[in-house]
Length: 452
Image (cartoon, rainbow, N blue to C red):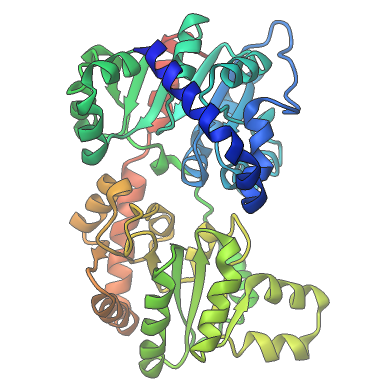
């Protein structure tokens, strides 16, 4: 089967080759990553003699963020381990650079050491690319976070006797149906992994339906529950409020990781809610910060005064009180045009909305708001965070809304009643704090398998 896959993939690549210049011309992201994913000029340095090297891979932004507690634990408790981290997308790479090399994830009492030794891009699943990059990295073992498994890659690792494990593994109902159409190939594909650390018992059952040996599938939990928690004191909260010009009568709605289509809904909701809550400020963080200019133009066209977060910060750095007050006291909406800001912004909100859920994007991580004891709202598609969102709803800390009208209604209910907000927030924090430990279970399994 693998040889048939290789033949088909190579034929498709040859057919697609003439289109590559056009793809690069029209896509800045493809231009930036293409050569690196082919293995050219990666800048990856050879492994030092006597050092064990671990290759950790995450597909894109969401998986990179979820990997933070795992990478941090390895760095803190496995001194001397050489970690090479890769991503498949430019946005994922940029986020990894910010989180693992610049290390903005550290808590106030932790030193600013980098969390990984090198960053790179995951190869295209062509034999040449896989061999070239895997030889440059030369790992002793590979850990894949959540997804992004490829037949050629797994075949090459198995041929070279390099163990590969899948952590924080989940298998949606839709993905399961697709894999079952090619069950024999899927079974062979996943069986090349030495272990699958599933998020839930349901994920384990789904993997078993593919014919994978039950002994290879362990339930470890979700590493997102082990994410760093920045417990802000009053001084930190005051500084954050001052950054946004928040006054005593200001109420804050944070809409995080929004996608195209959701901003228009939020704009309509904001305009209606503003009439009942004159001090309402919306902090909106699009999943793709490059969309900020278009979003700002749309909000301004609807007479909603909108500014970029970078503008507020630059005015503060200029230390010009007159200009700062003119801009900071008036905005209806602050657009977060910087990556890596969202999680801490939930600390100052009254209500949190999790994006990617009112459109078919699978939702995003609601635990970032839960960590700060905030009430959470999301749309009907939380399929990528099904267990977490269900736990939060069952525990009374989150609500799912089906429409723009319902979302606006729930936002106003929460803004009106502080007691409900506090009760939901408290229940969310209980979920966050009671479900930790997945990272430790994964590392213990790695020790048993002599991976670290």
